[in-house]
Length: 442
Image (spheres, rainbow, N blue to C red):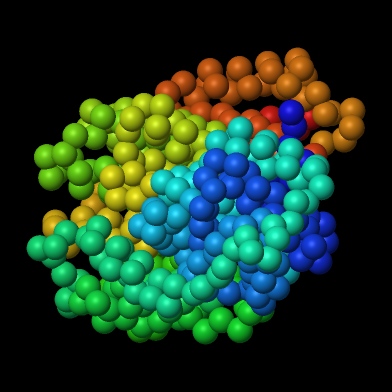
């Protein structure tokens, strides 16, 4: 059965347009509640959100939908997505709900769910919810309605959890850190985590007004962080996105480090501590230089499809702990069940403090290969691009010329009629020329 509403990361869209409307969200929560009640009569759900103005409306609708199905609700208020995953587990709740559209602008919003174990839910569960959505509602009578209350210390509990993942023999004393909260869900949490571990913290992007989430700040707009680090002569800058599940880091020179590099730092720190690192999961877009550097240290890397969901699937399949994407979605499964920007930042800072080295020094073995990425819009006649013989021959020729000094990746966009052509090579001009060469074949 195909999904009508669920995408690769929950349900997302423009506020006020189907399905992100209060009537649908109430109906969705009611359907989810009925699925929960069928398995667990005394079900309880947690609801967290980011700082979008639409979060108030959607939270109210979702609360009513769950209560109408006889499900109790615990409201967390504005809190990072990974905090909902943690608190669902800690509170022994049946389900965690996040109202957020992550790095999207404030006009968008979305709903995603975590299991009682703080993990993403299986396809079968999503299909069961979609089936329940097609049925008429069954409203609980007055005596069996669910109740709601607020968990007032949700932020404090999560702060302590984040701090517990940092080596207790270390501190951040002497470090000046700029923390960019993207005017999002971690605005009141991220500065406190680093401050309570000893750092001098300069907060930016920590004044949400409901409309400014991700606007010119955060992990998707790192220029604000770069400027703040340079202006304040800080040692490091940490930028999160709107729901705080991804990050970017900037060093004191203003150099930006992506998720591929940070994943390497985390893996090397584990090795240097004597921990086993049987393998690491990247994606199809992970820079080849990181793969080669890991291989030289005896650590294999497996590539998943782009998306943290697929990285997690590969980690579980191999029973490995570390994985991530260049966008800054990083997973350390011995620290948390899901990607967490704050915990990932702490893992990198831990490596720096243990070694007494800067990020640049920790990455002396990694020089990223230049990548050229071209987006080629396809006409209806080009929709079957994979059977284009000229393109096939062109790819084979480029791969032969690159040998083991680069690679070609061609994939279709999942949301628009666009073909993404990526060529990675040791020489930037060569990568660009080869990408243009392949695009011309279309």
